[in-house]
Image (tube, rainbow, N blue to C red; front, side):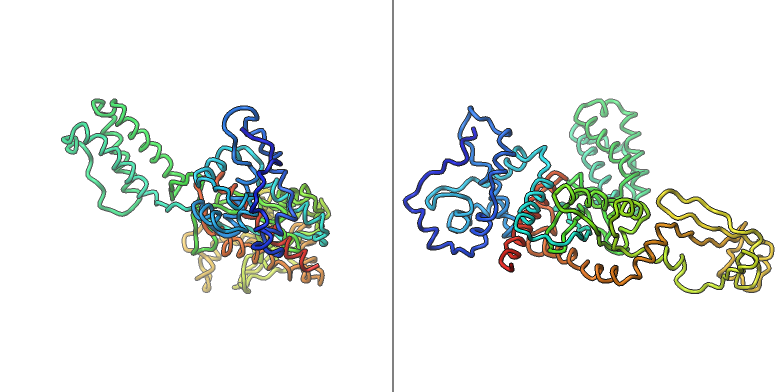
Length: 485
C-alpha cells in the first residue's frame, strides 16, 4: 500500500546531517535542484492505495537506482553503503537511525513498478526542463552519436548453440534408454558449422522416426528446442542467454554482442534525447527520432552534428525540409567517386562517353541504373567485350571470361550537391569542431557510470539502466553548469 509521500518520521538525530553532509555535497545539491515528486505521480497507479503493507516510497526506491549509477555500485553494495554513509541517507530522505531496504527490493521495483513506462523519455525530459529553467541551454544545436553496451552474458557461436541443444536432447533420451546411442548418427569431426547442421538434421530425423522416444514429453520438448535452434541458425551467427542482445560492429575487426544507445546532446553537454536498440541497428536511421524527441523535451533544434553515418539521403531530405543544418560530412564515395585514386578512365565531353586506360571509347552513352530511394542513381558505361579480350593491358581491368565490361559513376542528387557545398563553408567547419563533445559524453557513460556492460538481460533492463544513468549524468552536468554561472 502506498502512503502519502510527504509524511516523514521526525528524528531527534536529524541535525546530524547539517554536520556531516556539507552544502556543496553532490547529493545535497541534486536534492535541492530536483523536485522528485514527479516520480510519485508517475508511479502511484502501480501501487494499491488501500490494501496491503506500507510500501517503500517510490521516490526512495528510484533514488537508490540513481545512487547505483552515480557511484557505479551493485544492488547489494548500494544498500550496504546506505547503512553508514550519511550523504546517502540524506539523499534517500531517511532518518539517520532508519533501517535500509533488502537489496532484492530493487529488482522487484525495476521489474514491477517501472514496467510499461516511457521512463527514458520521461527522465531525459525532466532534466532538460531543469536545464531550461536555469537558462543553461543557450545553443540550438545538438550532436548525435551512438555508444555500445556489451551484454553481461557470453555469446555462443551457432555451432556451440546447436551442440548445446543436441546434448540436452541426447541426455533426455539416455535417461529413458541408454542403448539409444546405437541409433544416433556419429558426431561431426569437422569444426565447420555446416557439418553440425547436417548432424542436427540427421539427429532430428532419427528421433522423429522412432516415436517410442520422440512421443515422450520430456524428449519431445528438447526435440522441439533443437528444431527451433536449427531454424535460428539459418538467420543468426551468435546466440546468448540475453535473447534481446544482437551482434553489432564498431569496425571491420571489432564486433560486440549487446545494445546501442543512440544519443543527442546539446552544446552544453546535456543529453536531450536517447533511443536504445539492440546492437545491430544502423546509427543513421535514428537522426529524425533524436531530433523530434529533443524538440518534444523542450529544446528547439536548428542544427544537428554527427559523423558520416548520418549524412544519408533520407537525413538530408528530412533536415532540409525542417530547415535544420546538417553538420555531417558526406561519405567519400559520394564526394570523391567510388575510387580513391585515378584509374585511367576519362570522360570525353565531346563524345559524351568514357575512354578506358587503353584509349577505347565506350560503345554506349551513359545509362541510368536505379539503386533505391536512399542511394544515388548511377551512370553505367559499356565497352565492346571483344575488344577488351584482345587488349594488351586488360590485366586488372577486364576479368577473364566476363561477358561485359562496364564502368559506373554515382550521380549526385541535388541534396548531395547542396550538402557538399555547405561542408566547404566556414560555418560548417566551426560547428563541426564541437562534435567531440558527444564522444566525450559516451566515454563518461562507460568509464564513470558502468555503461560498458549491461546490468541485466533484455532490452527492458537496458532501458532502465540507460534511463537512470542518463538522468544521473545530466543532473551532475546541471550542477556543474550552475556552479559555473
